[in-house]
Image 1 (cartoon, rainbow, N blue to C red):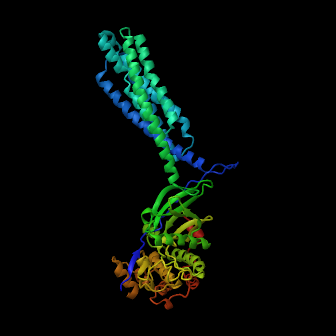
Image 2 (cartoon, helix red, strand yellow):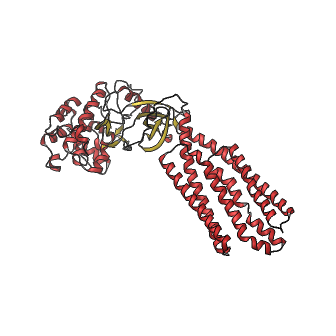
Length: 533
């Protein structure tokens, strides 16, 4: 019977090389956990919305200006003042839009204090539009009959820009429902004042018609205010729900880094400590799988027992109110070995030996506790920076760890006919579905070392079945044939790791580590050399 292959092809995603950290403060005080983060998120959102609101206003204003240049260009001093003022409004809007765009990208704080400036610019822009167009068309008003005067005056004090401002501004710029209502009622008075001014300065204007326009503006202004208040209140509630959805205990999700066959990986930050972390979350579409949930929780508990420098640290784990399981790991700047080779080509022999020897040290602790990783591969090893040292190797993803001492026949998480792991780095006994031990991890380390030195795994056939068959029967091409410059003693170490029979491999990772350190190239690389650009 051919075993079923459950291939977890997810790779450990490389994290950003740098992440800005908050500057230390001279005074420290205890604060509520949610407030600072929610305020910072609101500031970022506010800056983005301010920039978008400015751009929307600029496009609308430029459109009206272009229309006036075509249809109302009568020349004269009035029109020149109109065009000049319009240019000032456009320049101010563009400056504000660029400023807020930069503030959003850089995460600056206290953006809300500029809300008054933005609103004032909007109001002054519309006032300029109303009054200057009124001034430009005033000769036509005085020359026309009473009916035409009313029509032109209504056109000059068109309520549509004010209605758009009342209903649209609270949608583009986040605010509470109460503030949106106050804003709408206050803004509604401005066109009324413009109409009153027109009634005093244009003799033919009839006060009865003015009152009619006031009622019209009041009705449309009230409608716009209700829309704005309701929309702002609903948007605020949704914003709080979205913020809460991105929180996992004391951690806030910042961005998605990637995912694998088991769950998704996010960059996160502790709400109080501001410490960057990585959160692994089980996928919602896989949450119904009881075995997968058990495997995920088992990974956390196993990782929590390991304390070695070369094993990824686990900070916390838990469940959300919705039942989503997650755990929090240390943030590791740098790249995994798979990406490192794909980016720069095969590694120098000394560096490859230096990295794999560190993983041997980390595995010693796991193997001593009876834990077998079973999925060692280049993408599960990070070359990172820790304690000011470069090229610190960290072993990731213990989701396939096998602990024979803790499992019973009724509690197995892996069925007898199922193979878990990555085919290109899988030991023959693992491919056959047989029992595994620490020597299976040694085989995977040898395959990983082969990849680091040759730029490809020992067997790189395209079909998975062919790869597994090669692990069972084929002999890998000697590294000396791939690169004649590679040391012969290192080639011998790699080939011994890749022996088909576990008894022909190194007895344990300590023996493998000593063999690596005994290679002629083992002194060619260290943390100090890794720090040299």
